[in-house]
Image (cartoon, rainbow, N blue to C red; front, side, top):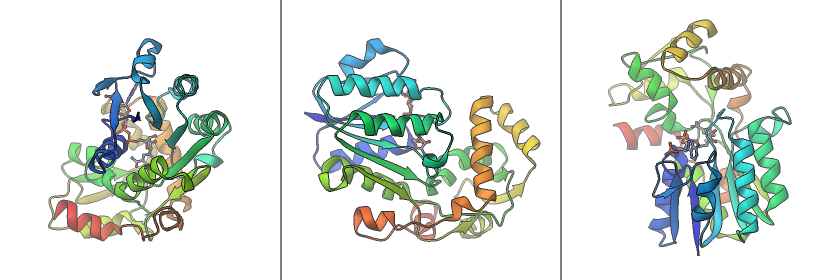
Length: 271
Ligand SMILES: NC(=O)c1ccc[n+]([C@@H]2O[C@H](COP(=O)([O-])OP(=O)(O)OC[C@H]3O[C@@H](n4cnc5c(N)ncnc54)[C@H](OP(=O)(O)O)[C@@H]3O)[C@@H](O)[C@H]2O)c1
């Protein structure tokens, strides 16, 4: 019996799968392109993906319109005897509109599973090296262009802390029926990050504030959907309002250790 890791080719899922295996635990990675083929939109792929599965890690791409499908998949998982599920959404998901994709998923996991955990990370440190911010900067010769002041602060969290929390929740019942909002140890501004990356191989090494219309233009040029860009703009507004600078104690609560500081992440990943 093993753990099925969905979104296994994404930033979080890939790390969860690697960490489970590093600990010698049986796990399979699922996505449209993964070792186990799973497409949220193709119910015909679900039963095979759930064969021999005991616990489930669920991650659904942001603003993809796939939450209802993923909810139906979780229902199928329960019918097939899966008892434990861990879901990743995002910091602040619990205060979004009741019909928002992430709130729908959070509600479903709590309703369906006896052993559930919800993990809500803030923006990841890794967004600067492999995620959204890196992608934007790579298309602008190293300049990250966002509709935010360079002084805007975020308590960025290391994907390692997210991964360790997810794996703890999958393997230790003390985390069941818990919700964790994961942040780094302190708020860091975009200007701080650019300073920290000076002289490194970081994809992001400059920063410029653009207005929302300018950001929208660049984002649609990159092929992103309106729904995705609207969701990003909502999350940027939350940063501008100071909501993403909040620091929680939840990495310590879950893992009994301090979160990784951004400076350490940069030292170890791009120096
Ligand atoms: N990055 C951040 O800063 C951040 C912060 C907080 C929360 N989060 C949340 O964390 C979660 C994971 O983020 P991430 O950055 O790891 O995601 P990601 O890199 O965007 O990966 C998405 C994963 O979903 C899979 N996928 C896409 N469409 C699919 C479909 N139709 N059926 C099955 N699988 C599909 C992709 O694999 P295939 O293409 O192979 O199918 C990929 O493995 C998201 O819910 C996000 O909102 C992210």
